Image 1 (cartoon, helix red, strand yellow):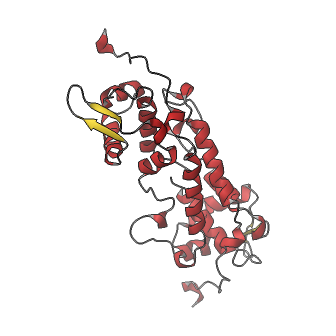
Image 2 (tube, one colour):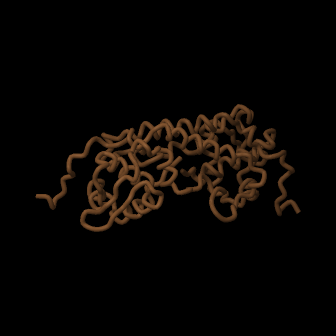
Image 3 (cartoon, chains in turn red, yellow):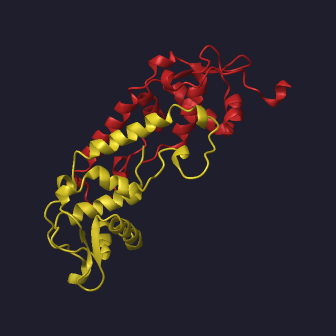
Length: 144
Length: 144
């Protein structure tokens, strides 16, 4: 089974932000640290903001910071937000399914229950449990 | 989170085969019934055969049949075989990861444990629990 790179990168950003929850992070700095696309990270940060996980502020002293303490952010909930109802198989998606056995299917409920078990297992952990170590001030070329 | 279409189609084939475990099914007939690519289904059937889930025989009376009773085939094990170690996120794949925080990561073990919980939850069911109803002899155009 697979989580999206959107989710993967979103978790990395949150793990880093949780290492220094008192300050704001710009997606530019996070993109530099992780070697990832700033544009892609911005889209992910917008989704996290819409879901109330981070708050963002534009401008010089701006950036994103966690909306709540890392210990209050359950890992399963973070992944559920980032996966944004990614359908586990085709018939879980929007619109009509192409599956010819949909009406007789006894697999669907079992997949849904197992997916819930996956999220519930992750909810045993919080963002605080996976926060990166306290960040030294990130070294970037323009600081020299 | 997402399962592959390879897994989705493999499960449909097994659900159908379990409706009439006493007979062999050809991938051509399954492809017709499901409106799926015969070539794609053949590849999936080969993987199921390699894993000892089905046995295949070439020729007129051939095709694939379940290697064991449907009640002996746990759903989590079937999905694990079909997903064929699909990496849940990039660092679980083969080769070196591009993730810059890999050595400090405390997310990996939690994802692995949650994935195991997902499979374990599915293992509460067997193929017999999701078998399609007893199949009428499938109607295909060449029979008229």
